[in-house]
Length: 424
Image (cartoon, rainbow, N blue to C red; front, side, top):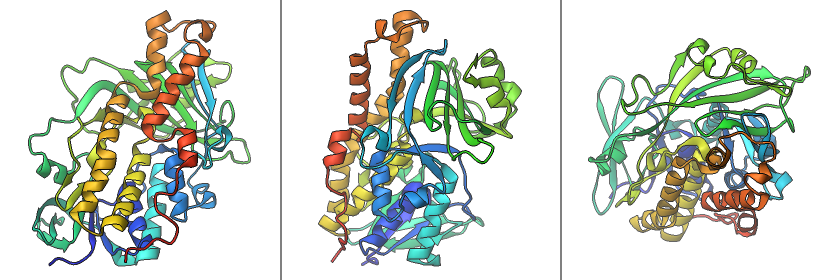
């Protein structure tokens, strides 16, 4: 019989959060990461209150999260003419028991990685080993890994978690006929700029139309000069009939796209200046995968982007990966390191999160911009004459419920994992 440990393929945010969860409940695990050296990749992401609650329960309090980001105070959509479409408080200011955080993705991942090493030991994360497949018996599962020299390695455990991301080899083995990655035509250009924060000083702002917009939010507190690290995403939707060509993440020159945003000047924001202030810009397609009917194959379960890569329109990809790991830990406490635990995890999350993937593909909370375009062509003076406040509030409440952070339900829910719970 295989060792009574959990094998985790992938050392991203989801894989590291799962490792910390397993350590918390007394379950041995090893993380296998493809890259030789883990580095702080990515820029800004948002952590919703339901995910922040889980990080707090793992011992990552506000004092730690403040080192990699800052609490969000407001979420706002603004039309191309500069008038507000919808604005609402977020996190503690909205009445949640936990804050919402805007953080530097790479800094958060490195913090989680360092905590795994501190709590589980230096050997808990093994790098330079890419997951390429798995096989299983009734008694255990074997993860197949390949190193940089091409040599094959095998590790055996009680269960395997595929947290190996968008291009997951484990998902591909489970679903060899899965459709290709889905690109809906939106191109994202992402950068960070030192600039003065806008509105509340910690606002998430979507500006523009549903096919042509900016997303802007700070991921650091202001310095002595009043400047913060501002994460921004410029987005343009184009004809996708020819498919995406090139890398999934490539550095590009600002002149490649800034013409789409020339003239976006307001008394509270100069978009071209914000873009030009970035030292480097990366281009991505906005992509996801069609949902699958199950994330589980016997003793193997998918987690994070391997299970449910989604459009970033709802700002909950990383949040859901963290929650995946916490729910999986709770199921291990109930069922042990068994296929029954994985089946219970699958039953709780696969269908609702798959629905969330499709909801985000349909623009997620940015769907309000679609309504504005449909009803007035994107030009308005008083948004209440276009979309009444009650309709806007109901739209946002529906999204929060689907994404798992409806305020009353979240505030009233018990911890995913009870304090001190350990697997016997």
